[in-house]
Length: 144
Picture 1: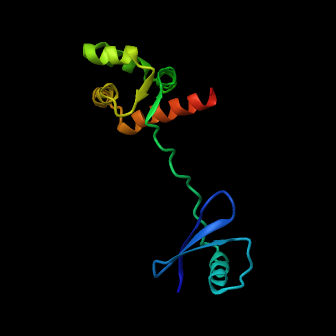
Picture 2: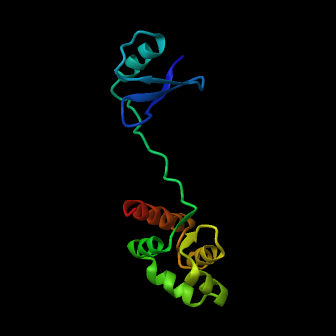
Picture 3: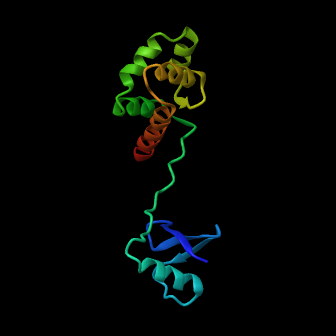
Protein backbone atom coordinates (compact mmCIF):
# COMPACT_ATOMS: atom_id res chain seq x y z
CA UNK A 1 0.00 0.00 0.00
CA UNK A 2 1.52 3.32 -1.15
CA UNK A 3 0.45 6.96 -0.91
CA UNK A 4 -0.47 8.65 -4.18
CA UNK A 5 -1.34 12.12 -2.84
CA UNK A 6 -1.97 14.10 0.32
CA UNK A 7 -4.35 17.06 0.35
CA UNK A 8 -5.34 19.55 3.01
CA UNK A 9 -9.03 19.23 3.89
CA UNK A 10 -9.46 22.65 5.46
CA UNK A 11 -7.44 25.46 6.90
CA UNK A 12 -6.06 23.35 9.77
CA UNK A 13 -3.82 20.30 9.76
CA UNK A 14 -6.41 17.75 8.60
CA UNK A 15 -5.49 15.95 5.39
CA UNK A 16 -6.86 13.31 3.07
CA UNK A 17 -4.44 10.59 2.06
CA UNK A 18 -5.13 8.84 -1.25
CA UNK A 19 -3.62 5.38 -1.58
CA UNK A 20 -2.66 3.53 -4.75
CA UNK A 21 -5.59 1.13 -4.27
CA UNK A 22 -8.02 4.09 -4.46
CA UNK A 23 -8.80 4.18 -0.76
CA UNK A 24 -8.80 7.55 1.00
CA UNK A 25 -7.83 8.02 4.63
CA UNK A 26 -8.32 11.14 6.72
CA UNK A 27 -5.89 12.14 9.42
CA UNK A 28 -4.20 15.03 11.18
CA UNK A 29 -0.59 16.00 10.45
CA UNK A 30 0.12 16.82 14.10
CA UNK A 31 -0.36 13.22 15.27
CA UNK A 32 2.68 10.96 15.74
CA UNK A 33 3.36 8.00 13.40
CA UNK A 34 1.73 5.54 15.78
CA UNK A 35 -0.13 3.45 13.18
CA UNK A 36 0.53 2.18 9.64
CA UNK A 37 -1.18 5.06 7.79
CA UNK A 38 0.57 7.72 9.89
CA UNK A 39 3.92 5.96 9.46
CA UNK A 40 3.43 5.93 5.69
CA UNK A 41 2.34 9.57 5.77
CA UNK A 42 5.41 10.69 7.72
CA UNK A 43 7.72 8.70 5.43
CA UNK A 44 6.02 10.13 2.35
CA UNK A 45 6.34 13.71 3.66
CA UNK A 46 10.05 13.15 4.39
CA UNK A 47 10.68 12.92 0.63
CA UNK A 48 11.37 16.51 -0.54
CA UNK A 49 9.49 16.26 -3.86
CA UNK A 50 6.31 15.11 -2.10
CA UNK A 51 4.07 17.92 -0.99
CA UNK A 52 0.60 18.54 0.30
CA UNK A 53 -1.99 19.87 -2.13
CA UNK A 54 -3.50 23.17 -1.00
CA UNK A 55 -7.02 23.30 0.33
CA UNK A 56 -9.48 24.67 -2.22
CA UNK A 57 -12.77 25.66 -0.61
CA UNK A 58 -15.93 24.66 -2.47
CA UNK A 59 -17.52 27.43 -4.52
CA UNK A 60 -20.23 29.47 -2.88
CA UNK A 61 -23.66 28.20 -3.94
CA UNK A 62 -25.59 30.45 -6.30
CA UNK A 63 -28.52 32.08 -4.48
CA UNK A 64 -31.93 31.43 -6.00
CA UNK A 65 -32.99 35.04 -5.53
CA UNK A 66 -31.60 38.39 -4.40
CA UNK A 67 -32.99 41.82 -3.60
CA UNK A 68 -33.37 44.03 -6.65
CA UNK A 69 -31.31 46.85 -5.08
CA UNK A 70 -28.38 44.49 -4.47
CA UNK A 71 -28.75 42.94 -7.91
CA UNK A 72 -28.34 46.42 -9.43
CA UNK A 73 -25.37 47.16 -7.16
CA UNK A 74 -23.77 43.85 -8.14
CA UNK A 75 -24.25 44.65 -11.82
CA UNK A 76 -22.53 47.98 -11.25
CA UNK A 77 -19.70 46.41 -9.23
CA UNK A 78 -19.11 43.81 -11.96
CA UNK A 79 -19.27 46.41 -14.75
CA UNK A 80 -22.39 44.83 -16.26
CA UNK A 81 -24.96 47.55 -15.44
CA UNK A 82 -24.71 49.32 -18.80
CA UNK A 83 -25.10 46.03 -20.66
CA UNK A 84 -28.07 45.09 -18.47
CA UNK A 85 -29.74 48.47 -19.14
CA UNK A 86 -29.15 48.10 -22.88
CA UNK A 87 -30.62 44.61 -22.92
CA UNK A 88 -33.63 45.67 -20.81
CA UNK A 89 -34.34 48.59 -23.14
CA UNK A 90 -34.98 46.04 -25.90
CA UNK A 91 -36.94 43.60 -23.72
CA UNK A 92 -40.62 42.86 -24.17
CA UNK A 93 -43.20 44.98 -22.38
CA UNK A 94 -44.06 42.03 -20.12
CA UNK A 95 -40.45 41.52 -19.02
CA UNK A 96 -39.97 45.27 -18.42
CA UNK A 97 -43.16 45.34 -16.36
CA UNK A 98 -42.06 42.31 -14.31
CA UNK A 99 -38.71 43.97 -13.66
CA UNK A 100 -40.29 47.31 -12.69
CA UNK A 101 -42.68 45.68 -10.22
CA UNK A 102 -40.41 43.09 -8.63
CA UNK A 103 -38.49 43.53 -5.40
CA UNK A 104 -36.53 40.27 -5.74
CA UNK A 105 -34.64 39.00 -8.77
CA UNK A 106 -35.00 35.23 -9.20
CA UNK A 107 -32.22 33.30 -10.98
CA UNK A 108 -34.70 31.20 -12.99
CA UNK A 109 -37.14 34.04 -13.78
CA UNK A 110 -37.82 34.64 -17.50
CA UNK A 111 -36.33 38.12 -17.17
CA UNK A 112 -33.06 36.70 -15.84
CA UNK A 113 -33.01 33.94 -18.45
CA UNK A 114 -33.64 36.49 -21.22
CA UNK A 115 -30.83 38.70 -19.90
CA UNK A 116 -28.48 35.71 -19.78
CA UNK A 117 -29.33 34.65 -23.34
CA UNK A 118 -28.77 38.11 -24.81
CA UNK A 119 -25.71 38.78 -22.63
CA UNK A 120 -24.19 35.53 -23.93
CA UNK A 121 -24.07 37.12 -27.39
CA UNK A 122 -21.87 39.80 -25.82
CA UNK A 123 -19.49 37.23 -24.28
CA UNK A 124 -21.06 37.06 -20.81
CA UNK A 125 -20.99 33.48 -19.50
CA UNK A 126 -23.50 31.67 -17.33
CA UNK A 127 -20.86 31.64 -14.58
CA UNK A 128 -20.69 35.44 -14.75
CA UNK A 129 -24.47 35.67 -14.39
CA UNK A 130 -24.24 33.31 -11.41
CA UNK A 131 -21.56 35.62 -10.01
CA UNK A 132 -23.99 38.55 -10.19
CA UNK A 133 -26.26 36.61 -7.82
CA UNK A 134 -23.39 35.60 -5.53
CA UNK A 135 -22.11 39.19 -5.40
CA UNK A 136 -25.62 40.57 -4.82
CA UNK A 137 -26.22 38.03 -2.05
CA UNK A 138 -22.94 38.99 -0.36
CA UNK A 139 -23.81 42.68 -0.59
CA UNK A 140 -27.25 41.95 0.82
CA UNK A 141 -25.83 39.94 3.74
CA UNK A 142 -23.25 42.64 4.53
CA UNK A 143 -26.01 45.24 4.70
CA UNK A 144 -28.58 43.18 6.62
